[in-house]
Image 1 (cartoon, protein in one colour):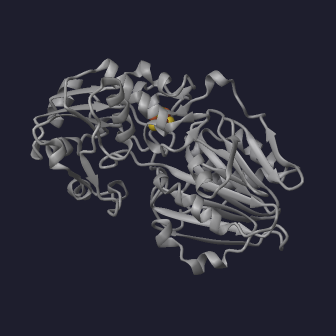
Image 2: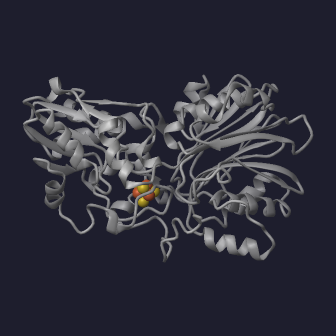
Image 3: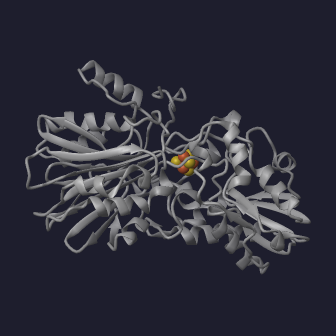
Length: 474
Ligand code: SF4
């Protein structure tokens, strides 16, 4: 993944309900492990015993990676046959332990555990509305607003899933949710389907997860995706129940295309489309549309690799691994200071001189955001002896911010804002530079409906007047 200066990922969610009464915490831990790429700032697991006292939830959450936050002793104490887990990168709300998820909320009808991936665009309004009617917020995250809304709607609803549906009518933005009630596990996806969510099954246990790779990791079989706008309720009495009253027309769906280009793992399928295949196709289209003579094609690890293979397949130019990535260094983007970002390029990536020395190299990366490290990576190749460095980017240029859970910054910080491709080429010091064209995006995801807001400024819903991202940061 070309995370050196790249987009911050959002979050990963995982829920499980074992109808046979087995403990789920360990499986949730391994499921979250497969989703660690979606968030490395904090993580947590909350579990409950469906046959125990209603509302008794055990939870543990902390800052850092899963293997830092959880020990075997901690997991051992988390007893329960229903549970929900979360890995977080903060796109709204600051990075503190209080803001870690899942959120656990006690209210008159029992206890609610909630894990959320995405970003709402009407949080300030909802926040105000809820505060005026007595809510006292403990955190600065969207998810608490959602939890309060559900709790409030529950008072006027027959079931918790009905309350989720009512709350969804008030939410604007991107969300994939997993809600744990004392006796039910509920999954919901916003009507546009920005963020993924899928259902799996292992023996007598049902699973909800951000990506299918998490199902594979725990040996669960993929059942299906939760559809955009759908609410699924999982209970031993009724299995999987579906409510589609919040669904919108298929033509209006707006999956975040960056899930395919960058966020998701290549061994995942999202809405039936292989992430690996999308990246291969992006590389193939780059080779068709922006060919160049060269000796090798290489990818900036990890997410540039599949697109580089696609480019190689299409062009006939051999693919080779030109970088060794040190995976043991914390990701640059979880350290906010510019200084760290810059110094970590070399710590993280080292070119293999034998591969690039004297060669004309095509280097594929998934995106350029601010452009603060692309020049360094190009220079690394040149210093290792590359004769020419041709950069190909497997997405169109970022021109607009994202309001839906991806940390695409304000326009002024984007390298492509107000600059031509030629100007960017000069800044990063490449011999040539080309981006994937906008027209190719639907083709890389098999024609599925996608959001292209950060490339076009045309968002699937009216963006907020003021940029509210970060407003709830402390
Ligand atoms: S604006 Fe870009 S990053 Fe944000 S949801 Fe849409 S495609 Fe994804």
